[in-house]
Image (tube, rainbow, N blue to C red; front, side, top):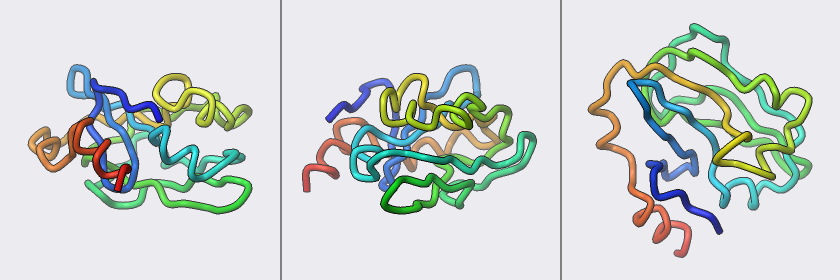
Length: 126
């Protein structure tokens, strides 16, 4: 199970990587393996506001549909349109080409509420 050391994580299995006040967000390798083959992702609208830990979309796999939770509050600046035609990229490269959304942070102190790679590794080992 791949866990990227340069990311922060949520207990709901989203990862976040922040650069210049913009967060790239996706689901973890653990989450995609639990879901199985991803067939569809429902994204929020670009320029919409999201609140930390609120639902911002859904991800549909062959066997289930799961909610996506925002690790931080802010404004959606971009969605990964490539997933409309190739949702399997989430399975193939969850920390790279399978990213979901980019959010401009409205409160960077919220990052303190997320968990480290080491803490996430312990969480999924339980």
